[in-house]
Length: 327
Image (cartoon, rainbow, N blue to C red; front, side, top):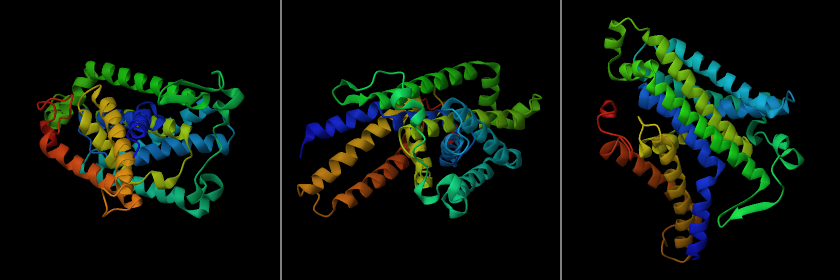
């Protein structure tokens, strides 16, 4: 077992585009769940609508990738409105039911062969990265970096975009939560009847929070898609639970907690994904094959999520005062 290689593979995930994608998804979910108290169980749906809106705009309509990204954001806005209009006037659990169902409906629509020419069906969408790869990449070609963070120019370009997107999302949420709008959102989370008694339109504020968070989550789907292909089998319910794990790990009602949680989540997941098969191969886990050891990673993540909710729902950077509503 090459332990140094395991550590190197783990460290490389700190700057992986997928890490930035999950960080953005966790930031958007923090807007929903942490600050507004909206129980969105369809994070995978928002990531999917952003990624597919982005890829379809390039492949089918031939749009430049910045315009395609705006299309992905617009699709997320429409998706939030469709779910929010009939549910946000009702109890919070209705939103949870609608979002998890809508995310699965989206995945099945993208998976069906009826729209294969547009969505790619089970094969997904690929070869839409030419707009920022090769000669279109403004970065010098070649591999550069140091240690486990040595990447080619194409991946560095996505990494830089991911860092910028995370920075903009964190700044946006920080500014919003310091504004009067943010104070109303926090008040709705704690007691929406009291906010309504003060003359505030609770439905409108909830809808605004749902749209803003949804766009940030869609940005996570776009950043992830820029480094790989778009496949419907990625946007499953477990992806939503992974984002919740990252959010709760860092702290739901915090500014930097989602970013910290996403990085820690991906580092730990990468470490276990490399360590457990290695232990199985040398006989230290004789009851598991290499494939089964990968499934054990998901079991550990699920147990970790339950323990977080039970013993530390406020996360690493959160406070119990901010997260009493979780219980």
